[in-house]
Amino acid sequence: LAKTTQPISMDSYEGQEVNITCSHNNIATNDYITWYQQFPSQGPRFIIQGYKTKVTNEVASLFIPADRKSSTLSLPRVSLSDTAVYYCLVVLTSYDKVIFGPGTSLSVIP
Amino acid sequence: GAGVSQSPRYKVAKRGQDVALRCDPISGHVSLFWYQQALGQGPEFLTYFQNEAQLDKSGLPSDRFFAERPEGSVSTLKIQRTQQEDSAVYLCASSIGGPIYEQYFGPGTRLTVT
Image: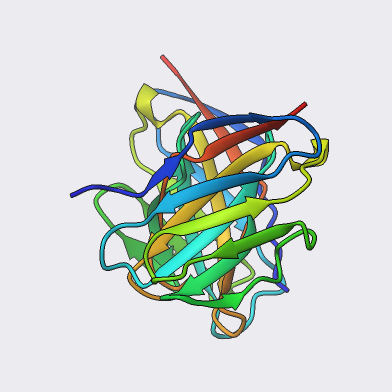
């Protein structure tokens, strides 16, 4: 089953663009990539989901190259409130389940 | 509208006790998921319901763990004869469909086994 790897932590200054890359070498043809955000003492919250190329919504962009072995979550102009753990996960459509990655702890510095 | 709620928010159990954790999903959501999240780690899938049917329980760590959703709405995760390694946050999520759809998570129940 597909597993994901991502950096354990990242720091960024307020106002900068942050890119978090996730590796998923064993992703299957019909699997999706999804990103969630989690604040302390809260459940994860959906950010964005994609299959290939680029997806953009009001809070983030998701870039998935043609080989789909990695993906990059892009957060434009981060603020202090974006300090959280960001999880990359693979939706295994053939197995009807999701696998969360280890998460990247993002710290936004004033 | 109301989100996913879980109760209790915190539970302390002595080793060997049985516990029951409740999840109230968003009304009308067909799918319900349970996850276990150890400190500093990502959530790990436990089990998945579609309406009242438990479609996948492959993530339940032992036969001491049991989940049910008898009427396709509220779900209960029961842990029998709790052990210290069961200490974790138990997250519940619901969605309009299967895992491909956005999951809405509750705040979790933090279980501490002493």
